[in-house]
Length: 393
Image 1: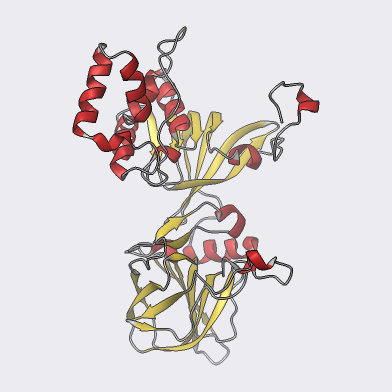
Image 2: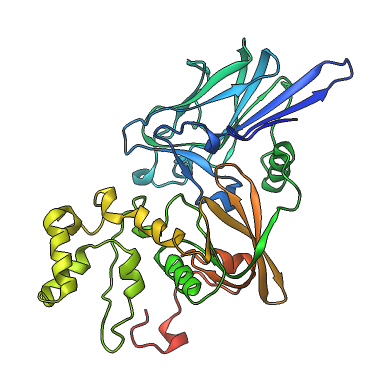
């Protein structure tokens, strides 16, 4: 096995009875050297087994994702691409006519040294699966591989397999596929462990970031784990939802200081300033808006409105915080009803790490860690009959 971590390329050599080497190569899409206009999406990796590249161009085809692949031998390879037709659930016979999907908006091509593979991918199957691309000829040992988006409407590519064994079908069952990937990557069965933390915060949105900073300033050793390359969650340049909610309100006038420290100045800060225009804080806010009137846009504003780097700078300046970006927690270890450790997977390299802690906070927004730990949960809302709350549905 040969491992090239920069492109997350897996090479599997087996020997046939005739002494001829069979080669299988797996290239993870999320590890392409140049993602171009494609973006890494990890939101459903717990359901489908991996992060993937997404061509989210709002109807405009995105720039190619590219990388290089080294083949140990030239020859004929069967190519498989793990993808899906994401509108297929709306093509079923019982789908109402006014909801029926037409076409394949997520289709894309795989280019080998600039030449498209004959098969167009993302055109079949409602579920994630390996789409067969047929036999292609690899005529040199180092080739350029590219994903070429055809529509700009959310094409999806998880991974690409090349094999001289033309009968090989890559595994699609998640447990089997997980073993397949880890074995070929050379990752250990048990991930390496970090130091023991006082507090492990899973989720780097505003809540998780605030919790981590607050604990660190109280003297705790903290790990902050975030599955994106930026902090802020909804209040980041990726999602672009403005901070909302009034802070510094009586009787707890200091409540909100930390949010004020890490968050960008925006719509609600101006709203507050206009009600107390003579305070030093309000005057600073007015100065910001004079220079940057675009900050009045609360949601879906320009990326600079959300000040991703400001959040990262505050966190990294805290000596008691270790920040783990691009790390998705997908396993939890427990002792009785207590969490003792979580295992995070890097969404670009696939490498895993175990973080032990005394206390844990689930700041994922969807309760991911609680679910992994076996906590009780429900989907939906409690009824008025159950809770007796006057405003319940």
